[in-house]
Picture: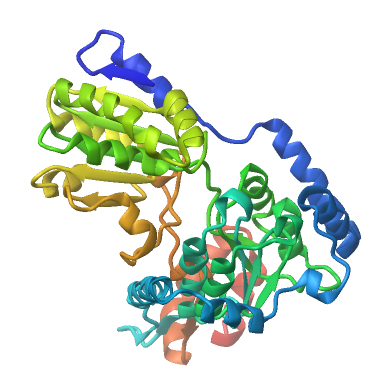
Length: 430
C-alpha cells in the first residue's frame, strides 16, 4: 500500500506516477485477441465450438448447449426466494425509472429563413450484452446494461455469457427474464464479442456491444469499434474516497475494499486531511480483510494498488481527484456540495457519509457501468444514448433555397467542388 503526503518534497512526482499507472491489458493480450477475432470471422460457429470447449470446458453440441431459453429464465426468476426477488425487482424498477428520464427529445422547427430543421432519435436495431461468468457473474450488471437498451427501444437484445463446465448463475437468468432479454447464448470471452460483431451461422450480428469483461473482452471491444458501436473500453475498478477525520474508520475501510474485492488490479484510494484517521483506516483494512470471503483478491488489490494520500486541507482534494478522474468518487464529509462543485472528472460521485458506492452498484438508479482508467475526462457512464443514434433532417422550399443557395455555391467553388455548386445552381436557374 502506497502512502503519500502532499507536503512532501517528492509528492508531485510520486502522484504523477500514480496517475500514469495503467493496470490494463498488454500487447500480448492484443495479439491474442486479434487471432481470436480473425478465427471467429473466418470459421464462425466452428471457431466458437472449439474455443468454448477449450476455455470453458463446455461442449456446444445440441441447441440447449448453445442457448438458454426464455422459459428457463422465467423458471429461475420464479424460483428465487421472495426477499431476493423483491430486491431484484426494486433494482430493476429504479434503474428503469432513472433511464426513462434520460430519453432525448426530438426536434422539429422552422427558422426565420423558412428552413425546416430538426433531429429524431431512434434506437439501434440490435444490441449485444456481455455478461461475465465465473468469479464475476453479476446479475446487477445485466440489469444495468439490458434495461437502458430496452428503455431506448432496442427490439433485439442479445446476451452472451460463458458457462464454465455448463454451469450458470441462476440469478443471471432471473435478471435476464426481468429485463426482457430476447436471446441468451452460452459463449464467452473475446470469441463471444466477435460473434456479436461479425455474426455466425447461428448468431445474427448486432449494432452495439456493451457490458463488462476481462482484459480479453475489453480488448476485443476496442478492436471491433467501428464494426459495431461499443459503450467503452473498461479497465479494472476504481474508487476514490475523500474523507475528513469525522468519519468512522470502519466504514471507510469497508468502502475501500468494496472495489478491491473485484479484481487484483482494482484500485482504492483515500484522500484525507487527518493523519490519525489515515493510520486508523490503514489498520482497520487488515481487520476487514480478515472477515471477507474475498480477502485474497481484495488484499492483493490493496497491497499492490491501494493508496492513502494525506493533504494539508481537503481544499487540495478536487485537483487531485480531477487528475485521477476515477470511476467512483465518494465525498465523505458533512457538506459535500462544495467539493462536488469543484470536481470535473469522475464517473459517478457519491455525496455524504451515508452514501456508500455500493448502493450505486445495485438500487440507486444511475448506471454502474462507468469509465475507468482516467477516461472520465472525456466519457460518461452507460445511458440510453449508447443504444440510440440521432438523425438530423432539413427541408427547404424554393424561397429558402434562394436565400441560402448563393452562399453555399460560393463555398463549394472555394473548396474546388463544382458538382456541389452545380446541384444548387440548376435549381436556382443560375
